[in-house]
Image (cartoon, rainbow, N blue to C red):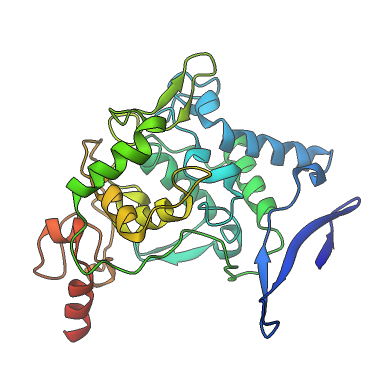
Length: 306
């Protein structure tokens, strides 16, 4: 059954209650609100503009953007599938509900606009937006609208990125190349540069490496994040890779050349640095190569031991 939340005029479908086959367990599964429920007023216009910025980031903020040229030409939607609403598609379900929040990466309490600018700087290999700009306010309004039924601090099933168990071995870039050639090349191209539409000035399928892709500070440059994302979503609309294939192809893609930037203020407390962050320095004696490709379980055990 559905439960409804009033939104200005009318109602929206805010979620669905899914029951297990045994009927012994009931859990709430988040579903995105219907865009038809966005109100037709000033607030609604801002939400719709925010959604458009997420879907068509390159049109507004790409190299030839009509607002500013501050990003690499990818769209936010390339990583946050279906405008940030897809189940396990790196969606925005829990984003607004969990910001402001303390993040180990910066060692500070971060606001939602800081999080958005981090994506622009890292995943879109660009520059930040003015925090007071209409574009920033629109993206915040949209993200808040997407997650408006989620309680503060909650993370409903299906939000974020899927977590995969660590491999007992290092991820294998050679095996990953084979996976890429058989499962990924058709969309992303043999050269990994994606499929670009010169008419819309957007990528139909995003580049996975090179100057127009994410840089080494992006979240999916961490193998655990990228492997989990791939496992849940790739190939697009036909996700069927095994865990090992997801790890290996993530390793292959992240082994390819891309823009490298210095983020010297990241992880001020090295003890909180995840085992799959491959940039020096480290709080342990494991190599940068092992921090990039694994095996990561050994690193975790060593940390617990000490």
